Amino acid sequence: MQVLPRLLCAYFEEGEYELVYYLAKLSEELFLQSRFYKLLALAELGQLENAQRLWQTGREEWFPLCTQSRIYWKHAALYALYFRDFHLTEYYREAFDAYYDNPLISLLELCLEEPEAQLWQTPVFEACKRKYPTLGKMWAGAETSHHKKVASFESMQWRIWGRYNETLREKMPDTGIKNVELVFDRDGLQIFSYKHRSSAASMHLVTDGKTTIMLDCGCERREEKDCAIPVQKILRELGIPQVTAVFLTHAHFDHYGSLGKVNGAAVYMTTETWGLLRFFTPGFQMGRVQTVSSGSEVAVEDVIVRMIPNGHLYGSVLLDILWKGRTHIVYTGDFCTENQRSIPGLDTKALLRGFSRRVDVMLTETTFGRTWDMPEPGTYRAIFQKLCRKLVFYKYKLIILSSLLGGIQENALLLQDIAAEEGMRILIDGIGAQRATEYFQNCIGKRIIGRYISASSQGQSSVQKLENNDILLMGAGTLEEGRAFEEYLQELYQYDRHVCVIKTGFIPQANHILANLRSQAFEKLLYLDIPLPSHAGYQSLKRFLEEVSPDCAVYVHGNGIEE
Image (cartoon, rainbow, N blue to C red; front, side, top):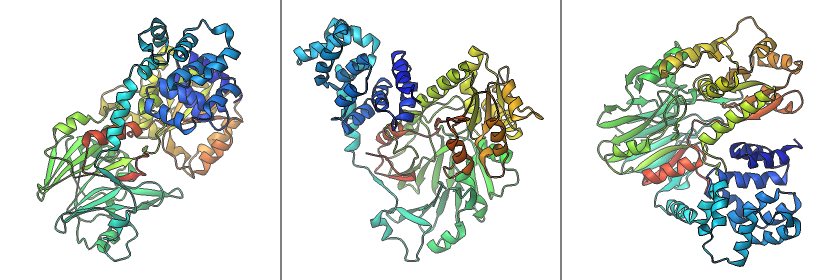
């Protein structure tokens, strides 16, 4: 860990801004330099608003930070130019006389001597801008228009209603209901949302007293056990005799795991989602399934529902609902606006072209709504690729944990390019992972198992698998209690090669095997957590809300957007 400050400096010089951000975030509680390089990396990654916000949170601290922490002089100069903190110039005069011929220092001198000059029109500025393109954006006025756009977003009329909204809670039927909350109530139409206690479980009821539509019906995890939503109890307490229809957004357990608790209603899902569920959960009870193609419309008692591909998972959709010609509802489900290797992201413009009227209420996930200093998902994919390349180069053996459905396959596709370039050998480990990948590659029409990526090797120990391969791709479920991963770890602790375990999929923090793994980090094993979200990030959520501009936005999965 002690080499990290020097590593941050070296990676920044090489333009490896994704790695600078990740390593700085990993170590910001340990080293002052890490906070500084996190600030610069955000700027270089185009996250100007986030960089400005981070600078404002510790504005008075940055000058002593630069002077006391042996910040590389050229990067400190860049910081001073980005954020116009010109009092650092005295620091350069005292410490770096030998470097006054550097363009960055020359530009600082110009700033000090001619603060009103249009510096972006000078030759010295052009020389600096070629090396640091963000410098041009910060000085040529691009940041001004950017922040105006952000300001317009914040001043919009729509509002986010969070959990436990007091005004709406007063309207709840006086039955002592604890499982649901009223999140929307207008013109006789009410929307109730399930209140999960631990891991998220999505279930929402839209009702006008005559027709009731259920949106998703998931299952949550408590203490490493599946806990179904008490659907029938909730319906009785709300006075709803029967659900008219259920619409399922995608094939993740926290969205479909309680479908067996719904009686009689038709369950609508895409053909692709039904295929995944039949393959991975044969025999699972989920009602009278009605399959429809992505992008098509379904009419149920004068309620029209469009099912729009939303980029989260193969077959996943956003639900665009016109309720009896008078109320326009959008339920995003889990969504991602960026393209993944396996599926395209949500096309917001195509979505908006199909809207027949203004959106009255949007129920949206905000899984990453509180991570304002987190880059977009594409940056994390670059971090993942670059770290895997470097770790294998330094002779590490990698074990990558991710979700069995979607995660392993996405990671394999991300690693294909560098596997071909570096001659890596990658093994998809486990029968379940092998079958899931074979099915998935047939669905998406992209080859995953091939020359550099092979499937499960039966009869080999974990050590033998690592000896014969550079990277093992495994399902995050192998960390569940009762699985073989604990024994697997014991073998690895005796292994005489460097091993890095990388978690990319969701695993509850309370998982005791994961806790053991974290405690062993930097001793026997190197442990890294690289989020590879198939969800919209903070910036994407803000842009999406701005573009859709609903009258009311309700976050139903996550804790809202941090402002």
